[in-house]
Length: 495
Ligand SMILES: Nc1ncnc2c1ncn2[C@@H]1O[C@H](COP(=O)(O)OP(=O)(O)OP(=O)(O)O)[C@@H](O)[C@H]1O
Image 1 (cartoon, rainbow, N blue to C red):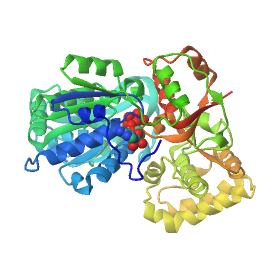
Image 2 (image 1 turned 180 degrees about the horizontal axis):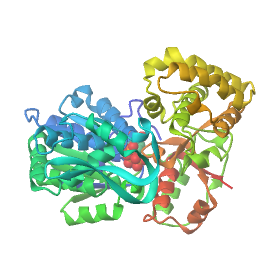
Image 3 (image 1 turned 60 degrees about the vertical axis):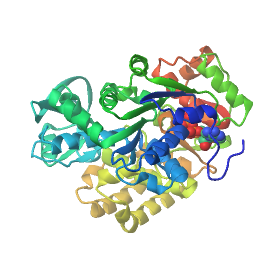
Image 4 (image 1 turned 135 degrees about the horizontal axis):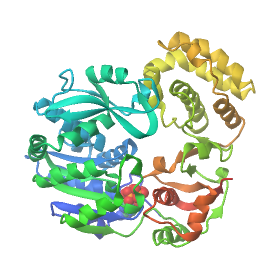
């Protein structure tokens, strides 16, 4: 398929009708590669320039940073950078939720412990506080207009910070995106907060476009309702087959019901532009109809990317795969240091960054600039020594004193345990030529490559033999992975 080098192309009539739909509640349902991001970008620009005198913002949101960045890039390419001049913006939904909380704090509808009205919001406590497996989870609740700290006894054990560390961080104005959600959830039970949020949309947002809407959870849906109750034009764009965020409460079934019960005008995008071969078009049609499919078996070396349900499966799949993140199972600090080593290898061999480099730097209290002159030469020697075949144990032991010297707060005792299996796996990759990057299905969402190899466990292979079920989360993740290739999708069987 030919495409212009700028990525600009004539929109189909379906795409144009969906982008320019004059209704205030629009739902666009689209198959993979049929132009969800294209339509989101077009609609954003159309609304942005339709009413230059209107001071209210045109806002588009998506759920992940990579999807948000992709949309932003396309809008700038198509409409120029002025299209994103404040207050108009393309942000993650989490950022929009932070804006809503800051609005409630600034209006005095809610009071943060310590009286903060601006907060530092982290993705997770793990990057800054020690966490341990426990059922006691520190949380924020809303009591009247006050935000209070509590603990809840969860049914399942998970990693949480201590109550003391939690209190200290919250009181100093630091929290996580989960805490922002807890507070908004609590606040929405009170009429005053609902009114303040409705008025936020009414006075400051004239158009809201939500991409990948089937990743929304119950709180997100309440926020969409508040936006829809104001004179804000609301467009929900998505594919129920590509809902991946059930772990944060996404309920694609509830989203479908919400759309059909709330008077949204539906537009469909049927034609996909991703497929450069009939085989890919055939594969997607069958997957979507829950029909059995058989994939050609291939190897990592034949593909541009290898995808799997999780990082562990990628590390165990084939030594030609360089997964772009460290698998769970080691301490946060060990993981951060191994991520920096992985990042060196990924930059050298693939010209790509480790996926969680940013988190690793936060955990170690480093910024990108300070990494360069200080730690980087030592990381480069680690890579050279592993490549030379030195024992992972001695490579680690020679790195530890430098880490302890360069990173305040990290002691050699903390690093006494050696992440030998991670280092051995990295060493194996360093002795392999022609590495192929590996990503999880989640990380692949919204992206495309020519040839994609999908690592399939015996149960994934059996799901494909019977046909995928869009109500099952792991089937949807497989669906996303199997629809990323422009030309060819190969199977990499896992033991
Ligand atoms: N009308 C068109 N003509 C030619 N190419 C198009 C057209 N619309 C979209 N494309 C191209 O098709 C590819 C897929 O489009 P886009 O990313 O917007 O689809 P999507 O529905 O968001 O994909 P996914 O479901 O994977 O997230 C992109 O490379 C895009 O530039």
